[in-house]
Length: 386
Image 1 (cartoon, rainbow, N blue to C red):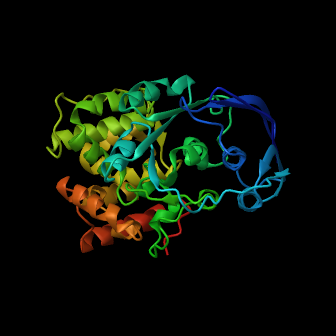
Image 2 (image 1 turned 90 degrees about the horizontal axis):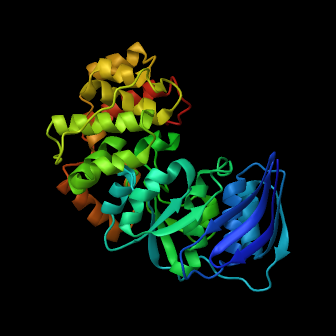
Image 3 (image 1 turned 45 degrees about the vertical axis):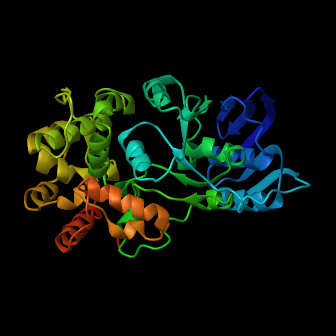
């Protein structure tokens, strides 16, 4: 597959360009907050690389890019980068001290922000179209909003790094050195391995720009982020639920069920009675998503088997048996290994906030049950659990 980014224009605070990626050929734009100067070509090249993704045959950019960043992009995209070379280079690895949060307003984002000390900068992506609900909610937190049409035009499907487009493009303007996302324990198959190392090292493309990754929700599940959101933002839960996914979708229904069960079990208070939508057929099916499947035993345990079957079709008998014969407390606790390497000035605040919210480390029995679950999941998903 070949990628090409040409006709780069800058007007006001909007970057426009012509993008070609395989069969896709579109005019794209991305608008940065008022007062933002044109980003350095290196940063624009990093943004283009996030759209292009890995395993390319070639990539062409009408930019002047520093040799060091050309090397970073070639490693990420797996091909030769065709562009002009910049005469002067910026050292992206030193001198950038500020912390940014990739913020959507969902439970995971709210939890990630809550677990950070100080006043990090919130950067939110307005993708337009069906993401309008999300934007209408997160703007109330006064983030730096970056608007774009690339998702609606079919781009951003080859690498998750597109979610950090705003963080990349605003790095120099906002002096960003660290970033945080709402990535959670069950979001990656790599989080299930027994030997955890370099947990907080940024992905290579981002590391090449000097970014340090600090994902404060990495050690907790969606149950944990829901608990944190309910305990710290009880007045916002209903509106956050409305914003995070389409009504009737699997994600929306699962979040509603989690909120209702935590409220019913008196693990968190709300000002209103939570409501779970009714659906005609299960929006999820077992085996299609590691994240969905990993959470299923907890849903069975706390929401009931019949309710869980309305959420997900084809739940295997061994999953039902595990749910019914285990405590599963670890879903409401945290995995200490996934916080290895976290900076201490952040780690102390994180652990204190988790403890104050009733979220404690895995116990010995939790580890045993967690390993039993990962072994079960490895029969249905490709997991590196060793």
